[in-house]
Image (tube, rainbow, N blue to C red):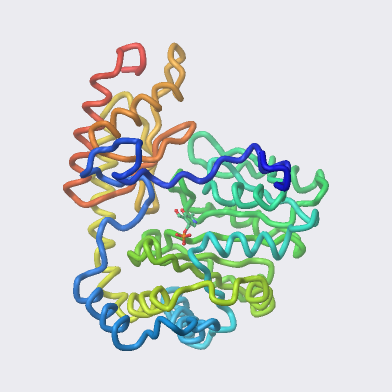
Length: 387
Ligand SMILES: Cc1ncc(COP(=O)(O)O)c(C=O)c1O
């Protein structure tokens, strides 16, 4: 360890993105990337052409980007209002902060709330790992509670008692995903009621990264709840994961703080242009969603037929697959083998301690997923799965 580095960073490992074909970790050149919940569809050629035209004719690469993001924030506010069925003036640019992916906004929220020993965060595992990872890199303690094993609802009793125990530093932020990743369930009425009951000095971050797939949002409630903010991203349904654009919606005071802590030119001009083009052409881009949802239904129905698998309902563009319990063989070991076999066949999925998260891909990818999961299970040692 370098002597000038903060001592707690010694235990950290760098985030490992999924392997590209030029890494030492060999994966087949043509693999199905179903491990990061992106849209399976690239931006349509006509939109890439528009973007290329903007790049050639409008963007001056010697100039800094628009650091205020005003035009983009106005376009986002219009979309947010429209998608929640609100009046066109309900949210304005002053209610929006834009980040280099919503990952950046998560870090800004942590900086604005908990840094300097002022607060801890609460998460219910399994959930999106970056809340915990980013908090720890900032030296912010992470309090974790579990979820119901069947429907993945947050253990609300444990969550409430974690807050009442008043840890040092106290819980300042609760992060939830709606619908949750990796378990694909939307917030229930009980979870929402608990979030509403939280005191005003606790910030509630509702991450709606998958809103366009779930079509459930709490945006309509945001105006009355000044301790709630919503995160969204262009990385999923809007097909711009490569360009890193996310946004936060909240009351003007909270947004003003986020604007204070962000880097001045956090979004490249190209990314700003791409997000604007995506919003202007949202009908075209979001047209693929019904097909993805019907593919999801087919995938769930077909995988549920396998006696070794347990698939739960999904409100989004990925599914969570667990193995039926088999006391004679540890689940995590079998899941690792299954994950490795799928990778060997050419399908990347996300391995978690209790299950596998599989993104819904193109129809061709999904049919390969079905065949490969079945083949991988057939080739497992009989004692590794319960039939
Ligand atoms: C729940 C959730 N939030 C945020 C993100 C990150 O999004 P972005 O690409 O905008 O950083 C992801 C990405 O997988 C996610 O699943």
